[in-house]
Amino acid sequence: MNAGLYVMTVIIWGTTWIAIKLQLGEVAVQASILYRFSLAAVVLFAVLLLLRRLQPMTARDHGFCLLQGACLFSLNFFCIYNATSYISSGLMSVIFSMATVMNVVNSRLWFGLNPSIKTLAGATIGLTGIATLFWPEVTGDGFDQHALLGIGLGAMGTYLFSSGNMISVRHQRRGLRPPTTNAWSMFYGVGLMALIIAVQGVPLTVSSEPAYIGALLYLAIPGTVIGFTAYLMLVGRIGADRAAYATVMFPAVALTVSTLYEGYQWTPLAALGFALVVMGNVIIFARWPTWRTAASR
Image (tube, rainbow, N blue to C red; front, side):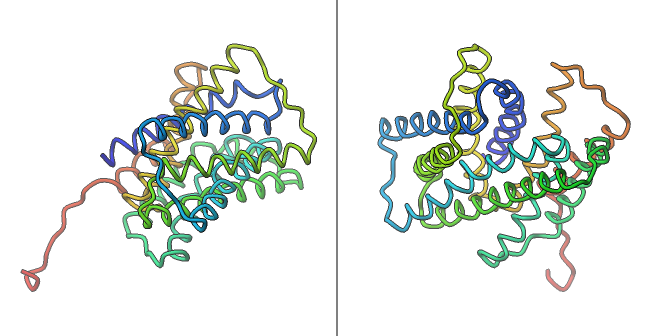
């Protein structure tokens, strides 16, 4: 089941970049985020109520869902989307892949968990691969004050994402399943995003273009309802440090899709980066043989 959840997360989130790209332009980013998570919350609540799977929660649990909504379903996207106004998507991919490191650190700070050697080794190789994959874009970003602002926003969005992972671990340790906590967290996240939109005076326009509507549906249902549920279930089952390696795989999947649909041209450097990402994946998730010493027999 873990492998299925991992593959599902990587494939879904690795292809959402196409849908996000189709939404840029006519409608404000803040409004698109609001529409995405409003629709996702409605669908998730409807399914849970229909199946009678919505779990009861305490006031304290709702408080943590409010924090999770801020970290996973509003402020993190607000930071990351705005970061791409100042830095390239390649550099943003490298920054977001640092969620693997942040989850290792946060798992230690929040729960006292130490990562395994193979998780650290695999993450290091994978992050090196991502940096190699996007090296031309990374070096193409001039590090002026605008780029530094973009890097700061990207890092903040990634840290919020990691913190949301930790809150989900807390929920699952209390027996609360991701579908229920995600539904309430999206509800609170939508409220927070609506507040940001009101303060900024962002117009709530809607595009009638089929591409925009199709992208919205894809981002809301597969990208959010299914993707976030699968990923956070994985966090609870194998740990936040290992699950976060999926963030390293997303850009690799995205570039593979781009090869098929946009004619992306692979270079030797990009191929090397992709190979390192795959190698890191193998190191983290492969079952390695164990050898016992004679004294332990």
